[in-house]
Length: 203
Image (cartoon, rainbow, N blue to C red; front, side):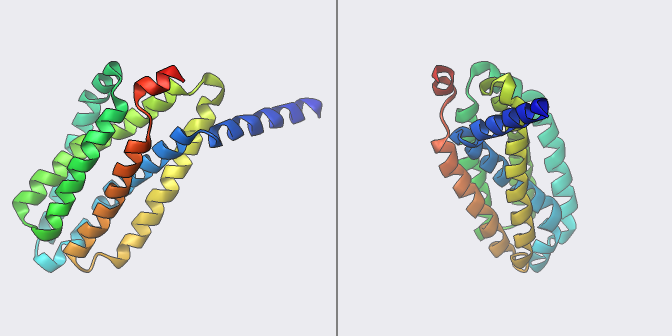
């Protein structure tokens, strides 16, 4: 009984330490907003493009985005981690992707879809690995599992909520891309609150 209480106390202490860490809340939210954007494209792009007659290209655009995203995962995270520029990477790609989506609010055509969304996939999917690497780098072994679970749970709650809400915005392509741009703007704000790698190294 005493052993069980000791284990429970350790679990509570570790979760308390995780919950008190602002950087984990931020990266959990960043991951959730990024995953939500990608999940939304995979789930709702086809019906969202119906009003402009481009629903037929949605599957190809999403497939190309995933393929380029996997290439990005193979090429980008190691270089970013090796240079210690995880935060800088996030601060760089988020506004770029937000601009892509903002342009699509006002001008949607086949060329822009096949350029902007695959590039977004190439840049966005590696961010998942970079965020997971953040946990491995800056969380001690004793809280590593708890931190990973916390970030995963936080991000999943956000992404599922936004994917469900998106059903109310898919009737018009401009409204849909406006909806997708909003979380990216929030992610940009959060990325500037996230400490830089060198700041984490000094903590």
